[in-house]
Length: 278
Image 1 (cartoon, rainbow, N blue to C red):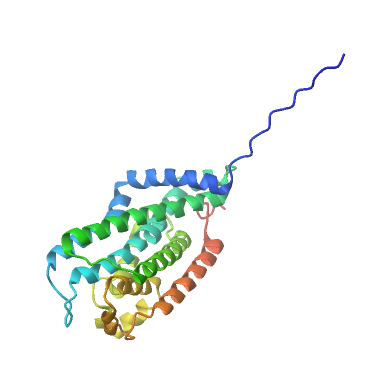
Image 2: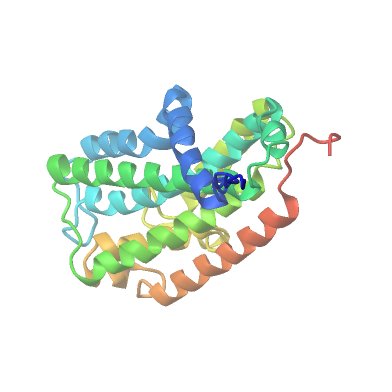
């Protein structure tokens, strides 16, 4: 008498790095918006500054043009928003996770390490989309911002992507600089502020001192802000740039170089554990 053999039920394959990374995006978003400090300084700050400067300089124009200050300022705020949500946020948050043992616990789990970084990238992307949408709505509804059209939207897309990727990678790499989580904000925030003042965010870049222009040109925020000005300002405003044009090809090149550099620095210097515990 023959006996039937039962076929064991197939075992589902464990989720891959991408699937786990997408799950981490939800976790990262919840943690981000539960932290009041992060929500204010990395998400809401560009909108707060837009409201303050838009109200103070309401109706003011950039001489010798009739372009409103708000129209000029929104380009800088969007570029700054990219830096806030990516570089500043990650350069402060990752040291906190390193100090409280989160990174060490993640390193000891079967989860692919790539999933952790996918979660961070997803956080940056979602936060930026929400931020820039609200920023443009505020500018359009309350300060008469003229929206881009046609080719300008394409420029906006590639500048946003290159800016997000490069600043995200640089934020991951820079997260090793603060010795403790407590000192991260004191190191990162002044750096971002200096770059804003020297990159044409708050003032006309062409009116800044030459040494300041040369300094800012070394970093991505200057080129990201310049690309955004080409999106929100009319073509004739290119004449007010230092080079007499928006230099979009050069903007793309510099941001691409910083993307590659950020990737190399992240791979070389990123640390899962605190100093002395590797």
